[in-house]
Length: 547
Image (cartoon, rainbow, N blue to C red; front, side, top):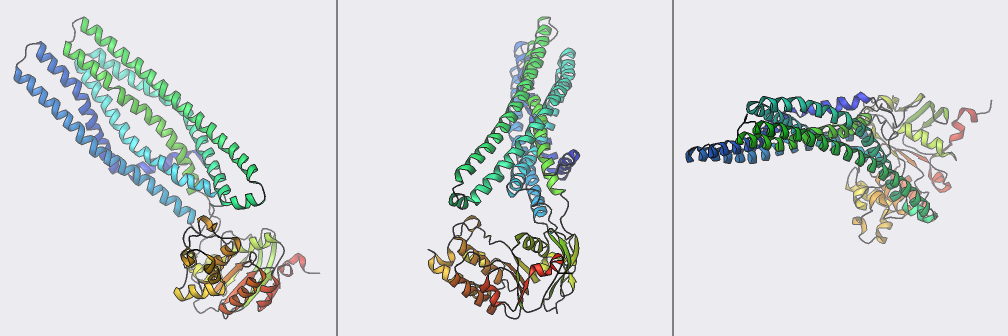
């Protein structure tokens, strides 16, 4: 995995905060009003006590009790609406990051799926995006906590200069110490997320290949490997939790010492008669009140460390360099569908030349899977060739708009299905209901439906693993045929079926694709016999040509 620029995470975090500044400002102001209301409670109680001790009138006491009640009403309303604004910003922030990640992952330019495992991308787009989103709400709370500390300091200054100065001098020192301690947590948090992503990726692989693992008797070895990765993820999480607990514990210790000092100074001033009994109660109440805001400020530092670690991972995906260029041109609408490969150099291929005539079924034979993979990667624009080009009706594929190109040229590589029914998979990109029916017949999926409990409405399961390999392959072939693409490229579409079914598919494929360009990479004699033209891929390799 690429190592991201450490600054990109911070910039992403700042940009996310700036985008949601309106909602965050509203939440921060409402939370600040809530904190002020909380700070007013001990001050008001102190004033009530002073009036009672000094023999104040009942009316004065009642007026201050009304003020106390109003403070509680303020507490309720401001927190309710402030929480709504903060949660809205957090949810929208995380959602926007997920959308940006999804757009980048699905970008036709590519460059992401070959650098990160799908399990890692799922982890980044879910837990990391959510963590950054939650940080937005934490920022609003941190601002209100700072306002609360400032307000409490002003009040205590009015009560007594020594107490006010202690609050003003101690708070910055406390924040600086806890911020320095929390830096270590950023590294631990990043390691935790990295280990969790690796474990999620391995779990995805195991679930996907469980049937194969059982078939070859390797389920035990795979389980042992997952246990080791899971144990490493657990250890990373425990290490992060220990660091977090240490940070929070030290913060609580610092807060306790800080408040004890305030209480000590206030008690000595009261004994000396410098401040009243009510002022002592107000000061002690404010000292207890300050535990919440100060804890919020120290938690903000920890939350930022966690969010920054996640933001770095998100920024790395968003900044991943593209694998291919994205064109804006359109295919020739009057083109017949000729596909021509000129001097293609990619992977194991060096200078490949191949022409696929328009309207013909062409079979390409090779016993080198790496060659097929290299050609298909360039045909589907998942990889940029080192040299050479691929022309569709004389137009370079690299210059075509991805959506227009995909509507003209369809590449069906692996028989991967999606969760849903058989009918939904076949109709995913179909030209119409008639195309679906014709494709099911040509690929013999209609025979598969007779053996399924709910016919076309049978759920295929995740990645189609509720079906057998041959059934899955036929459904994937039907999905490709149903597109009625002018140019269709297939890879081993009958490798998992029996010979009788293979012959039926060969006849159906030739009939359905008559008059349209079709390129089939296969070693099946039955399929090759149905082709209009057969080309050994080795003959197209320069090193295979005799001098």
